Length: 373
Image (cartoon, rainbow, N blue to C red; front, side, top):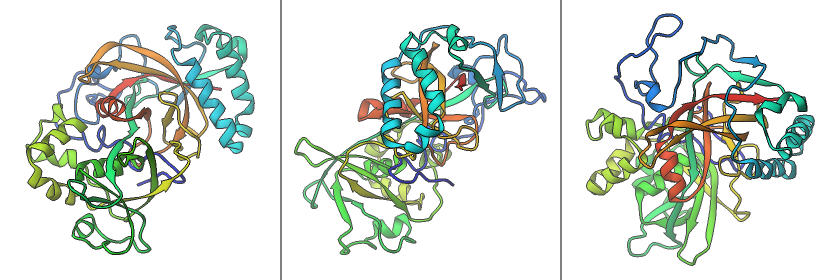
């Protein structure tokens, strides 16, 4: 399993969408090129989540050059994308040098209006991704930076420690909960929620509010070496939450209804994440570049190199996670990685706080992705 390095946002991507949501079942709706049914990683009909098949041909190559982008709608985040490129240039000389010509061409195109019909006029070529099914349907999940309410010392309801990295780390979650790290001066904060601490570990970083109106950024510092077990999947397998209703909010609601069982559930996942205080306060991906919401993605570097510019067809979903039947085009830069982000799967950075977390936790949808070069 891969982990983010430097000040990477997350360790396991948002397992609230893949590992947390994985379950069995589902019914076939269409056959793949070899005749087997096409299902989502959770066993569902992908067309419910934005996948399309009508008019598309099966694609064998991971990336295929195309003469035009079929989606002719407007790019809706031109300003945010230019800010993201500016961050790349300011924080990563390596990426800036590697993609200098590409960034220049794409910047000129964006400043001229970012009309996808005019890509070739600016010397920009595009390649479309194969998708998980060969029909260009790429899985898009989401991640975010949570805000944890905490205090610097244990008091009242604030009793759940967030730890810095110990000199030795081969301790299970259960051992840590039992007090194996107490008395070593590793406590960075004490939160009011064991589940919030756990989800902070899922994301790999986030903000801590000590009650004074200022937010402190806690960055990923390391992991205890145990394999991650998806607690959402465990809840589904135990019959506690129906597969189709699984989400971060569903896990929170289960925890509120079953407070005496939360620790036992979390201990079934022995993996544990440690943190460090980052005074810069900037949310950075594995490339060390500050991330702009919905202009940065985590990707599989074996498929999409860090620094690549992507035209992403983002599915529109409502407050309950239902696909609304449309997609919108965003320009994004691949600047992060994650343990669950493999192959034709992108994790879209949604931003900071509860609202970003809500939409990230519901995201498990499909759209097309073009690499611009």
